[in-house]
Image (tube, rainbow, N blue to C red; front, side):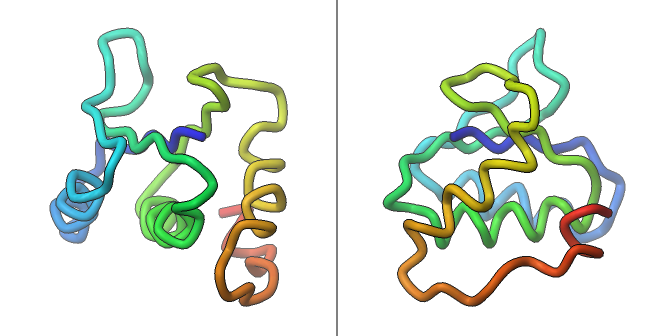
Length: 100
């Protein structure tokens, strides 16, 4: 799974970028990608990925890639798939948060 995000003019954006850069699998977005920063990780890092997704989604759109490809319904499906790998399942993300 790859989460791509940015750019954003929100004051919280630099901190989000620092968090992403500290994660294994960080890379700068490529020339052909619609985002500035990306984090690619395995299911073993589901907690970190979920936290990053929630923070990035609060600032703007997030691109979700599966095997570095944008798939139909990728963003809608990756969260339920990752829930199986969360160490402490906290319940579903509220609809308002997931759809904004």
